[in-house]
Image (cartoon, rainbow, N blue to C red; front, side, top):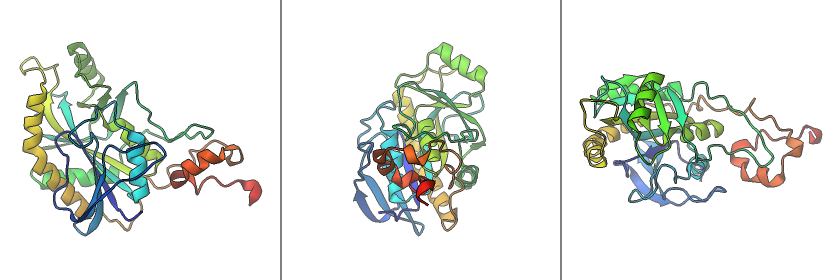
Length: 292
């Protein structure tokens, strides 16, 4: 099954990937349950790409209901080494306008109800999240966005909130004081899990609105968000196509080997069921030295 080079996660307003040839639908089973939807797998710019609508067909999953572990694990099973996330965000900065693109390099976590690690059940690992975005992939996204004619902002902070409700005004003002540049509801769990799965991850954040901090703008409404998303859908597709064409898929992901020094549990005491479940991620590391 591992024939995919690049994974694409589509968010609100982007539920399909145009331009995929030799298209096939794949349902991927994972030990963490069902993915948000079947994958659309095909060729784009000569590379094998898998697309997944993170909110499911018809946008049926709220941010808190998405099975992030299943989604990322399935991309790993498909063979993807790089994940591109397309996401709708609210602006926390005066100069970041609807239809702008932000290519963040940092996250702040304000979620509360979501599993965000593959580990546990007798196996402990602590990956570094100091730099949660793959810089190499991020720069490809930035260059592609600017090449597509977008007004793109470089190197900002994405605050990931729980949702599904939008922020209160007090929260929005506090987040601005913290230095958040955009606010969304989905990307941090994906970034954490991608790091554990040793896959590069980067976000193309599509600004849809000013969060409710802005006194001169209307408070955010879903109808306004959807209108901006529809106008930006083709831009997002163009950016992804440019990135896919620019990547050197023969080079391993810069995040390959992220787990090499992260696993702290003695392999000899890890339960066999846990080893089996996580074999696609940790199999090469769980070698009991006593059997060598």
